[in-house]
Amino acid sequence: MMQQIGIQTISHFYNFNALRFVAAFLVVLHHAESLRKDHGLFHLKDFGLFQNGANAVTFFFVLSGFLITYLLLKEQGKTATISIKHFYLKRVLRIWPLYFLLVIIGVFIQPLLVEWMHLPYKLPYSFSETWYFFVFFLPGMVTFYFGNHLLEPLWSIGVEELFYLIWAPIFKFLKRIIFPVMLGIIALKMLLLVAASHGWFNEETRYLIRILQFESMALGGLAAYVIYYFGYHSFFQSKLRKALLFVMALLALAIVFVHTKTFDDALFATIIKSLVFALFLLLMGVKNQATKVGEHKWLVYFGEISYGIYMYHLVVLTGLVELMKVLKIHPIVDTAIYFVLATGITIGVAALSKATFENYFLKFKPKS
Image (cartoon, rainbow, N blue to C red; front, side, top):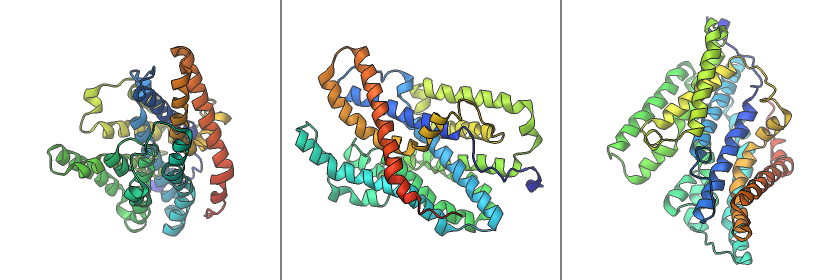
């Protein structure tokens, strides 16, 4: 029954690259205004649009869980197994080169540039104090122990890598119960959050429980599972799907533009947001129709380099903030110059990195 109403043939999900770029750009906006505020400059941090760093990362987690799960379901359906070796190799070649390049920049090159340019900045940690966190993909603990720093965005890459480490083996060895496993991950996270809220763990453990958003990726995985097995169900062919998609789109926009401390600090706020994002992707992906905006060649391309945009943007912004301290023409003029430079330089660096650095490693990815 499931094979008759599922969709096992999708090779590309339309509009998802554009969404990936939008999420990356929201992170850029978030850090751009956070830095200006931290340095006592004119800023727009009080506006909801510039407070979406965490929301954008949550969306990335949901999208990653969705795409990885769908690919694993396809591989399992086609070959009756999962090649863990190929899965790991693909992830390593896509993620590790840029990840470790940023570590080198942040730990070794940045201090030299700061000293050379006589900037009033001191690296809050040393390599000897933190190398194991970076090597074993827990860079979020560097932020926890040492505060804000240039490599702060790497925390989410570490979370994804840890998720990938367990996801392929789970699919391979627990394929018959993968749906309840994903539900179990979400339920476990809810129990851990409740326990943490009652003071059951120390501060470090509570922090890890918060940042290891495996439940977000599991919700994305559930959306992919539904499309793979039930995509041709009559429900998804009805007008109700369009109405629900519209509602989920409005809720997603509300998450982006409207921020209330009560909701954002609520115990299950991230899970609720992840559910909205997962339903949005499900309702878009099940029809998988290209749109003029979502498949515009520039948005598609920006989506393809969004990993670089996410990874390099804080390096670019840190330098630009020093420039803005000197500029100070007029708040509006300064803001326009700041964002034009931030956007242009970040995209330019990401594009150059993809073409000359990242693509070199991607040539070695297994074809199957």
